[in-house]
Length: 199
Image (cartoon, rainbow, N blue to C red; front, side, top):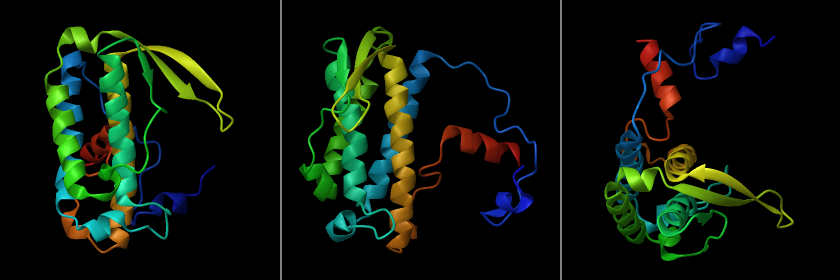
C-alpha cells in the first residue's frame, strides 16, 4: 500500500480513494478540433515569449531543449495531416530532425499557425477517415501497423503534445521563465478535471 506521504509531493495531501475523473459527458467528433487547436495555441503563446537562446538551451535535468520538444510534437501533427488526409498510411516515426522549427521560435510559430489553419479546415469526413498507422516498436527498426481513424490519431498527437508541453514547462522553470508559461500549460484534461472536482 502506498504511504500517505507519497501523496504530498506537491505540498498538499490528495484524499485517498477519490475518483480521478468526474462524470463524463459525450463529445462529438468535431469537439476534438477546438481542443487540438487550443493546445497548439498554448504552445504558440509559450514560444512567442522566448528568445532563441532560451529556446535552444539544453536542460540539465532533461538533456533536451524546448525547441527540440516543440519540433517533436509538431512533427507528429504534420505526419498525421500529411498522411491521414491524402492516403490511409501515417508513419509517425518518419520525421526530420534539426529543422528550423527546432532552433528558431519564429519558425515554430509559423508552423503552429499553419497546423491550426489545417486542423480548423477539417470536416467530419476527414475526421472519420480510416487510417493505418505505422510505429517503430524497438530500437532495431522493427515496426508494426495499427488500424485506426483520423479522429483517434488527432487526439493522440494532441495528448502527446500536452505531455511534451509539460516537459517544456519544467525546462522553462529551470531557466527561470515562469512568467511566459500559459495557465494550464502541459496539463492533461484528466488533471484539469480532477482539479475542478476538488473546488
